[in-house]
Length: 114
Length: 109
Image (cartoon, rainbow over all chains, first blue to last red; front, top):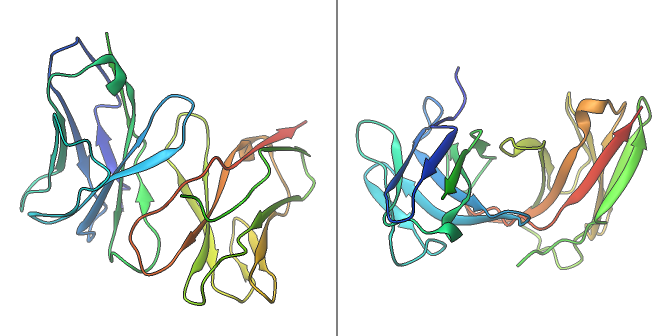
């Protein structure tokens, strides 16, 4: 049973470009969470999605950031017009249930904006 | 807003038990204590969780005090690969994990 798969592992973008981060949850998991870890800081919740629905995006910046989890395919975190401050590690987690049990994390995507 | 307090760092000798304390004095009756760790540059890894009884799995043991205001994660035989940041998280009927600063554990040969 493969774990949570994130790709790419490393992504370099120039300021103003778009970044697309992909996350395939564990088999059987329909709940996906995105977290961001800025350099020298802790992990912060960004968004929680179920299939085709955004449940909670309270931790996601209002501008330039969006997330989706389509019926088919991976969850996508999209950052438009990236700025240097977006440089961070972005982690995806999945769980079979939302409120019980624990979540499994992927290895993250390290975004560097140059 | 972290509900837990952990020491910022601790050292441990390889092969010895590592005892990681965590204070959670405002924990509610329905909230669990979770432990995750993050090895450098990797995603957080679930270790163990408990409500009020002590728990043990292949990775660690979790000892929760009777009043549930504090707990201790025990790594029975620390290895160099256990060097990581360990996070103690209180989680109730919520899907979010609130990560604090954690404890940076360094296992020394």
